Amino acid sequence: MPAPYDAILTAPFGKIGVRTDGARIRAIVYLPGHVEGLAPADALTQRLAAQLAAYYDDPDTAFDVPLAPAGSAFQQRVWQAICAVPPGATTTYGTIAEAIGAMPRAVGQACGQNPFPILVPCHRVVSARGIGGFSHHAEDGFYLDVKRWLLRHERAMLI
Figure 1 (cartoon, rainbow, N blue to C red):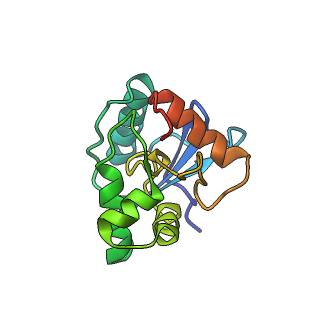
Figure 2 (figure 1 turned 90 degrees about the horizontal axis):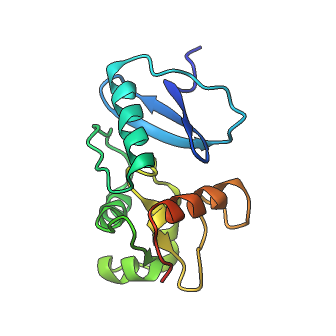
């Protein structure tokens, strides 16, 4: 049975599990800090690890690793809109919904299905009344702590 991750990278907020197809990133998963690390074993995961390390030093770092195709046409529209939000800024589910002709709840669901967090910065999408959820988690805990860390790191002001 293959390992569930091709790399498990240390992050300031825990760990990041990475899955690839050998040529492209297939998924990035937030993991708690107690999970054992797994060194990048190939050039792609090494490249992602280097870009993530650069991002932890400078939130304006751009990512250019290849991503595997994922999601429905609707999810891809949402993720494209998310990618337009620069570091240090936030937008709301409702603002994205209005821009693409959708409902805010559907945008939230697409955010939660994002297979490339940080690279597709869904943490920059917040509720009209506060931080909102993150990775299909609406209650305080690990995932919202990760979102808060990312927003603080990028010096984002909540709308």
